[in-house]
Image (tube, rainbow, N blue to C red; front, side, top):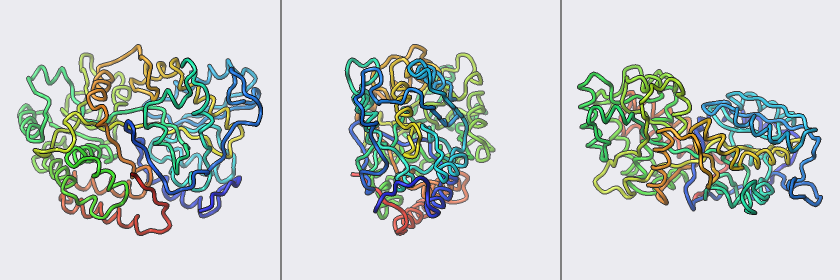
Length: 478
């Protein structure tokens, strides 16, 4: 396939962007130590490299000092103050550069017309529901190669490059065909959350097996509290622990088969065991009434105010709830309980993922400025500032947050316990239409409208349809 380097997208590319962006539900893309991706797209998509002038120590990317800089940032649970703070440091380095900043949501709707016209920002945090589909942007040559950033000296790192300061796997995650086109700024953990103080008060143990979970749910329900809730209008949240349980039951090949669109991936025994386990929550009426119609903020608020004991979420939960969380609530995250008697992965294995994918459009007027702002954001000073504000880790490997709540403490403990068994999946990044279909099918499962067999068959049918569609660029995970 030939990659085009045009000033704007052609009509076919625009239709692909507009058709998939609205359907995408992306909580971020996932990484694990020592693991990456390999795509079938060419490795030279997008432009790369700073201007052909000799860099200096203070400006290794040769940023034009008076060139304006524009950023468009997804303003979700993390807000955008951390970027504004980094822009202040950028302004100290380049005082003659005008900085234009916009924070918002549903970035696909905002940015599709700008990609058509060629008038794009210099740096984008392509996150949240309704974001731009990454694979389509790469296929159309619309994203810069971030190698200059990764090979530049990191700030405050004693001579290391930016690449050398990142959590292993982060660069690979944002690479397509071996070329890095996205950098995932945050690093999040997904799991099942509960209030440690509530559990200690009632003498409830953290369940290690699914039988333990069901026994505990029965006890919780007897007190008048609902055992579970989830973000019903965003069913990807409840799909996550189902896939986590399947991965732990069958090992990493379960996830690789899903990512690679293999026949029978969604109907394999580990997938069925996980779906059947979570379907028991429906059958036994262990889910808070009205959950299926709740937004993420509504479900999380009900959970934090004691209406339910468990909720699935990523490690942004602590920051997103903010002042809603009662004093002394002491929220903590755990991985999914074992759904079989012989799970392939250890009980401590958990899903770790890169989040907040930052991209630099190839049509940007100041692409090196965009990369320089990212370099500043990946300094220990900016990373600490982000974590202190959001209670979420960045992809910088070695820094020490100064403001650590119970949730973030448990996240760090869970990652340390999981170690090299931390896992991820990628299909939702590669195939947004498949992701949307599987999410909707999972919603039907968790409301009891379909059973686990029907769920697995429908998910597999959706995957097969993508596999058989020659218009969809395919990717391969080794």
